[in-house]
Each structure stands twice: as C-alpha cells, then as structure tokens.
Length: 198
Image 1 (cartoon, helix red, strand yellow):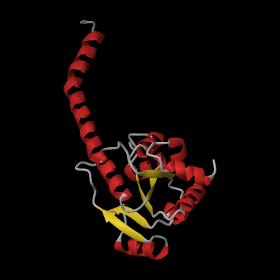
Image 2 (image 1 turned 180 degrees about the horizontal axis):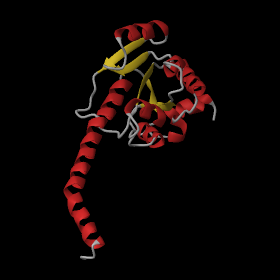
Image 3 (image 1 turned 90 degrees about the vertical axis):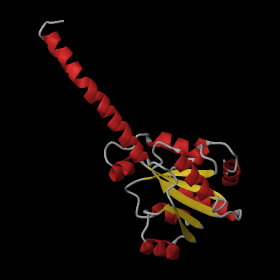
Image 4 (image 1 turned 120 degrees about the horizontal axis):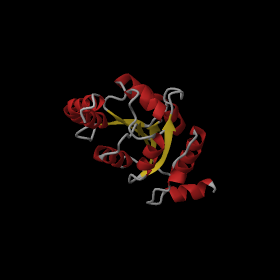
C-alpha cells in the first residue's frame, strides 16, 4: 500500500491495528511526514497504558483534541519493567498496543524501547504538540524540547481517579488477605493428611 492510501485508511474510525501499529521509527517518520503534507497538525503522547481504564481514554481523547492526528508511543514490556519493576506490565505489549488503537482518535501507535536514545520518538515525529503529564518533564526539559523538536509541550493533569499501579496494589492486597485467611486451614488439612488422620 502506498503512503497516501495508508494515510486515507488511518483516517477511518476503525482500529485497523495492522496499519496503525508502525514498528520502526523511520516508518513512523514517513507516515507523519505524509500526514503533515496534508496540512494536519501532529500530536504526540506516550505512556505504558497498562490495564487500560477510563483515565487513559479521557487522556487520549484530550490529547487528540489538541491537533488533527495523534501518534502514541507505548512503552515496551522491557521499558515498563525497567521503570515499574519486575511484576509489570500486567498486560503484554501487543495487547496494550491493540487496546490503544481501539481508543477514539488514535492515528498510529509504536513501541518505545529502553535502548532508544533519549527522546528518539519525539525527534522522529517532531510534533506540533507534545502532550505530557505533570511529572513527565522538568521545566528545563520542556524548554529544550520546544527549542529543538516540538512546536509546543502541553501538560495535562492525570485523568484517572486511581492509577493502574494503585489498582494492582489493591488487587494484590486482596489476594494476600484471602490467602492469609485460608492458609492456616489448608496447612492444618495437609498436616492431618500426612499424619493419617483423614
């Protein structure tokens, strides 16, 4: 498929995962250049998007409202583990990519890896608007980004009432409580069975 045909397809209100997932940064750059050539403003954001919830959907919708075409960088499994520990992500990268493409207004998605150079995706996209959360960049980093590779950095507040990490901690705690309640009975039954009392 030629690049113009791809851009037309990306404007459809369908997931089209096999076309929206762009694997290489060089390909991302080509798609963005073709979209920009049509006079559209490019918006970029990124994140883990682990266990997609209402806050993610609201955030992506707000990001998309800042321009015409939304590019989303999704942290690879290895990048999420590096940032959040060995128990994360809860959802593997391919599923997270698919879920992001199902969100309204997403143009293309790509994976971000730990081995990428700092701001590699930002430099490839050169967005008109870069969307970030409050803790993503320092004021100095924002000034540097706007000076070197972005039209504007716009900071959005977190839109979830509860983060994915908090939800997972709550789930782990609930499981631990159930195990703690049932473990004595379970051990007692095993001891009785070994002792031949059952």
